[in-house]
Length: 389
Image (cartoon, rainbow, N blue to C red):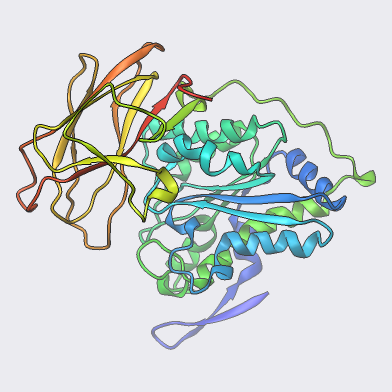
């Protein structure tokens, strides 16, 4: 299929959509899991299609919900398997990476029993070993489910053509996953001047309707290839056992603990609260505006982190430490005006598997630009051992 784009110089250049879609394919991987889901759909059984990621996956900047890439992918399943009841789950949360994703997976995704999942953390993750480990934790948690979900990785990009594909791709290859790259497909077109950035993107990172459509087409290309190679007789090959972990693998077992599920062993000056914007994701948390307020929890985990809230407002600084470890500062004020978000602060790792004491204190110190001391904790995150079922 040939499309045409008008450049700023007024020169019409050809855009070959077929070539773009072919270039998006990083790997088809092992299609046994996809074929198993398709076999289920062919029989008219219900299938749950899900997407997991950050604000791109959540659907930021798409003009309508049905134009989001995840909704378009779900529609392909409905059109291709009309006898199956297709349920769609959007588990995207803006400004979150696989570090938060690994901890919230059970509540936000696995509880829905997905059959096919697109994982999109190519922009929000960072290039360091910890994010490789948290991505693997996400994948292993999904892949080990009893219904054998199929998983595909989607690598998006920012305005400079950057993503963390080089770090995530080996993890995906380790599990023989289908993988597609928005960057590999479209960055050459932008560099050649055949497509302008604002043809496909609404800002520095979020796709517009056309960008969402391209992302969906890349995933659908994998799905259609799998459908076209569905085994004769309708019986898929055996699903392979999970390989041994590629990383240290602390994030295959995680917990997200809020004020409803975790009680402090000591509380001096903190109150519980429910933020209407984030309560649907993380539940009730703790907040204080009084310097010197302290919280103490007893939790199990090899890795312990704090999920807190940042915004340009009257926000303070808290410090957290585990057992006798060094204190880690968390600044709840930042200089952007687009709203608030929930960063995850790693407090301690490589701990022994038993119980540990997490202590949090609101400091008298604050950012010079802040006019207050408020600090909100949304959850305590642990990894490596179970705190609860």
